[in-house]
Image 1 (cartoon, helix red, strand yellow):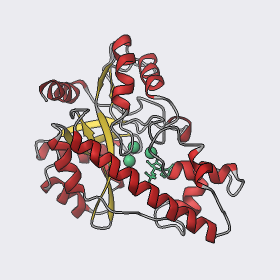
Image 2 (cartoon, rainbow, N blue to C red):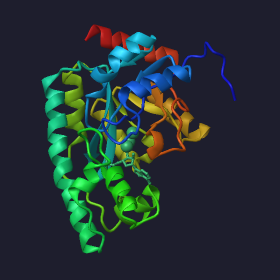
Image 3 (spheres, rainbow, N blue to C red):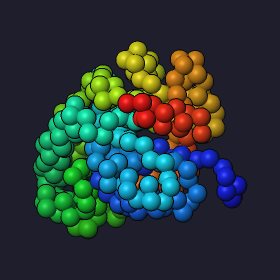
Image 4 (cartoon, helix red, strand yellow):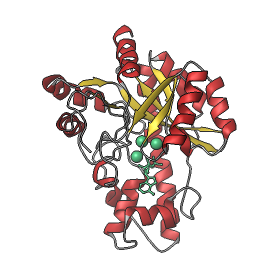
Length: 279
Ligand code: AMP
Ligand code: ZN
Ligand code: FE
Ligand code: FE
């Protein structure tokens, strides 16, 4: 399918080498331009670093880039990813949150490696670090090291059999409350959006997030059916919230998802851009 060249698409859920994506922030900007996208946010896990790295290239190529991040949080025992947009990229509160997440990841990754060792699959921290190009090290890097050592045939299989949520070597790690992240995002002048709401298993968790003051719901997301998208868009409208969209592009780490397959329409994107210019 080809879209008209003036068709507006802003992909607001993407990952770079700053976390577990495989394109650098600059390469992501270039790919977005070559695919005809009008806007982009790089939402790496638990870091706000990519915006500053990608901005010069975005300005050069005329792509509208807004600050973004995807924070790992929880409501009770339920993991919840929160997207942050249009915040001040030098905000000390958010930078501190990112630093605390790095410590959480160091402890958590060690705990996962200890479990893998017990299962007869020793992987060294240095072997994991080889696959992490940025400061955020996550399970996809551990999975790649497991594949490199010949323990398992693919990253997906590593998640399915060992390190995916609920599997034998899965460790959740220290919990970061969703409410705290929402308050810090707001403190940085930003907006908080519930990422891929279809992955949240309990309706009560979504209701709790709405009470905590989220500003939007990611209603357009790669793996959602049109019926599911309609449900989230309706919920966002009923609460006067933004509906955003994005692909969750990770590059070669998830080669089945191309950049721009889900996107944010022009109107909510303009709201986010205007919000950024006002912070
Ligand atoms: P972490 O932030 O370390 O908990 O890792 C979570 C990331 O792992 C997600 O954002 C995905 O990019 C990736 N992931 C989760 N499940 C899978 C899977 N089945 N196959 C490949 N990557 C996955
Ligand atoms: Zn990821
Ligand atoms: Fe996510
Ligand atoms: Fe993501």
